[in-house]
Structure formats: structure tokens, C-alpha cells
Length: 53
Image 1: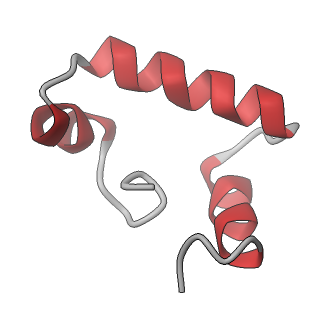
Image 2: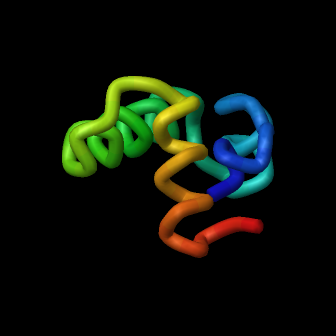
């Protein structure tokens, strides 16, 4: 949930040793599976689900 915590896709990729494209693809697929369309909705989902404070 690094993106939800405010890290950019580049920062997430660097910290995990993955490319920006890989992180972007995973984010897009997660949004689609959850029926969400934006990072703001992703943050709301994470808070409501107890994934972050």
C-alpha cells in the first residue's frame, strides 16, 4: 500500500526493485478488480478496509 501512503510509482518501483511499468500495471489491475477509478478511491478503500490508518 505504498502508493496509498503517498509514494510515487517511481519511488515504489525503486524500493521494491521493480520497473515503473510493472508497478503501474499492478495498480491499474488492482483498481479494476476493486471497481475503482482513481488513487483517491484507492485511499478511501484502504482506510475503510483497515489496511491503513
